Image (cartoon, rainbow over all chains, first blue to last red):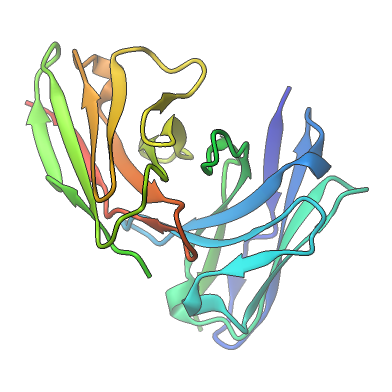
Length: 121
Length: 107
């Protein structure tokens, strides 16, 4: 079964750090771009970052640049999001998603169930 | 960043209705647009990619159209399982940006 499972969400104090993980199974992980998307409570979706198949190209939304780092371990079939200098505005459910990139367009066809980050003192 | 504006923000419709949701980009994005459906407490689901490509397994009552700045998601005959929030997403440039969402409710 093709599947993504996130983990690592927690309650963190402002200024703290956390690493989220996303474990892939059922597909050839190292042939897909991967993406993180988040959703603050009661709000819409926000694209956070993506990474290419080999991990050499990374892109971020401006609000997390310099604080978040996306990475992957293809041998472990895992995607990561290292988050530093966290603020209350980072409170959200974080989803990882597979990008099947079809017809020259992103297409996030497989999603994890999400992992919740709460930043609060 | 490219801004994506959806309209309406919410709508009420009945089973069997034809529903149209629009998404406007703040600049031309060719056909680099996808549509996602999200139900409460669950992850988004891909419906349409590249403006009009129907994702495998998605019912044919869903269709997408448009290019440049104006895009449309149409549900030809609304079914009970279609009550959800719909989002557009541009992938023309970084950062990718979602529309604010359109909630489709029961009339």
